[in-house]
Image 1 (tube, rainbow, N blue to C red):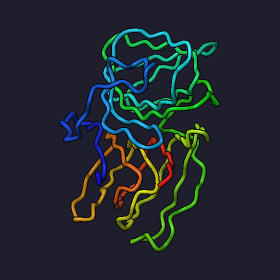
Image 2 (image 1 turned 60 degrees about the horizontal axis):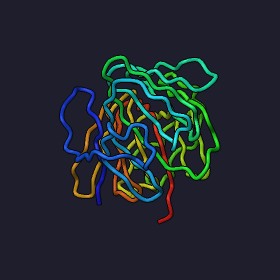
Image 3 (image 1 turned 90 degrees about the horizontal axis):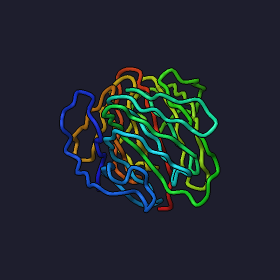
Image 4 (image 1 turned 45 degrees about the horizontal axis):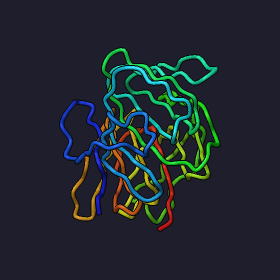
Length: 239
């Protein structure tokens, strides 16, 4: 099974992940620009997009989290002020949102999208590194190879129908055993670095500004030696 798919490297280095040009659903506003790295159970997709121009979307057809890695993207929901998203920032677009998208010059972003049966939370929900963090539970002792970390999160978006949650999370350093990942998870690191261990002993190293996707069930460990903060999307699907 795939351990993790690197979607972007902050230093511009090429990634080994295979991408395919495809739309996410028949009404995808980024259909001509989207590159998909993973699509699986739960109607979720992750990948990258390069875009320049303007789009008017009467009703956004799915839920989508975007994180800009180069350039600037302006998102304007009906009746709201424009949200300008630059590098190391992102936003969640709620299904059903009436939206204007503008990029005056080339912008590149990574994404994690999921289908929705009906809109439940319309609007734009910003993701920022200086999040409104709140304490959350730590990891169970049986999976830790280090003292328990202190974890915090700022969950800005939840759609129960799609089992889709997004926000910002951080933790103190810790080391965790290799185990099947419990959720589909998109991550974009905004601080720190992590080594993701595989069952064969190899380690995938990612740092600030890197993006990746880990499918549910993928065997993976975690080792960090400094504070790590990340934008995340998680989705739990039936086994």
